[in-house]
Image (cartoon, rainbow, N blue to C red; front, side, top):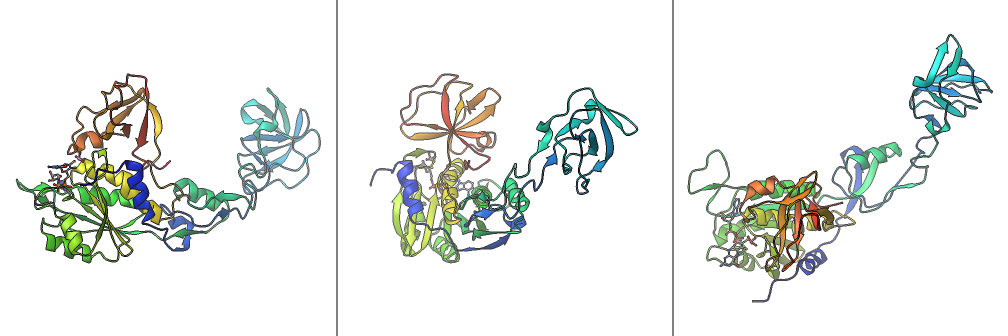
Length: 394
Ligand SMILES: Nc1nc2c(c(=O)[nH]1)N[C@H]1C(S)=C(S)[C@@H](COP(=O)(O)OP(=O)(O)OC[C@H]3O[C@@H](n4cnc5c(N)ncnc54)[C@H](O)[C@@H]3O)O[C@H]1N2
Ligand code: MOO
C-alpha cells in the first residue's frame, strides 16, 4: 500500500485531471455562482456625472445664497449657477454646472429663497464622475465568481449579459445498506442518509449542477449501475465505502466498471480514505462516508474540482489567520481540520472532533488547519482557518 499523499499534492493531482468547461453567454441576473470566462468591461461610467452624496444644497461661492431651483435624482437642474446661487439637491442628484460644494441640509437655514449656513458647504460631498469606474474599465477579471455584488457591478456597468463557463454537471451517489432516504421514516438500525443532501448543497455552492441519487446499497453491481447511470456527469462523487472493510465496495466497483485508480488516501483527518479514479474524461471522487469526513473532503476536494471545471481563478480554499480564544492541544499524526466556532474574541475548537459528529460541524464557522505534530497552541495564537460559509473561497 502506498503511503497517503499530502493534501496539496492530492489536490494538484485531482485538479490536473479537470479542465474548465465550454463558455456561453448568460443573462447577468441569472449568473450567480458562475465564473466569468471573459473580462466584464464597463459600457458606461459610474457615476456618469458629478452627483451630490448628501441631501442639502448645491452652492456656488460663499454664502448667503439665493435659491434658484432644485436638482433631484433623475431630474437635474439644467442652468448654470453663478456666485451666490444655490439649488436644493437630493442624494444622487446631478450637481448643476457652476456648483462647487454641497451644504448639508442639517447645516442650512432657509427663509423663502434665502439660504444661509451654520457650517460651510464642502466639495467632499460631491461624488465625482467616474468615482467607481469609467467606461472601458475592466470590472471583473476572468475566473471571478458571480455573486450578489458582482451582478450589481456588471449591471451598474451597463452589462446585461456575461460570458461564463457552463455549470459542471455533478452526480452525487451515497452508499450504505444502513441509509434511509426519508429521515422521518427511519427505524433502527437504519440511519437517515445525510451526505447526499449535504454534498448537494456544497456542490451547488461551488457552481455545480447537481443530480443526486437515492442511497445505493453496499452491493458492487448496484454501485456500478448507479455509476453508469451518471455517465453524463463531468464529476461523479461517491460518498461512503471508501475504506478497507469487506463492505467497502467503491474501489472494486470502480475497477469493475473500468475505472483506473489515480490515487487513494490523503494524510488528513478527517478524510484519509479519499480516492480519485478516471475512465476517459470521467472523473470519480470517492469520499469517506463518515459525515464530517465527507464534509471536509467535499470542502477540500469536491468544491475545488467543481470550481476548476467552472473556470474559477482560485480553486482551493484559502486560509485566513484567526486568533485562538481557547488553547488547542498538540497536533496528531495527520494534518487535522478542526471544527471551531467563531466568537467575537477568536475561535474555539469544539470538544468533540469525532468524524461522525455533525453537531459541532453545524455549530462551526471555521476549520482550523492543524499541522501534524504541531506544538500545543495557547489562547491568543493566530492559526490558519478556513471560513466555512464562503466555501473557503475568498
Ligand atoms: N480498519 C480500518 N478501518 C477504517 C479505516 C482504516 O484506515 N482502517 N479508516 C477509517 C476512516 S478514517 C474513515 S473516514 C472511515 C471511512 O469509511 P468509508 O468511506 O468506508 O465509510 P462507511 O464505512 O461507508 O461509513 C462510515 C460511517 O459513516 C456513516 N455514513 C456513511 N454514509 C453516510 C451517509 N450518506 N449519511 C449518513 N451517514 C453515513 C456510516 O453509517 C458509518 O457509520 O473508515 C474508517 N475505518
Ligand atoms: O479520516 Mo476518517 O475521516 O478520520 O474519520
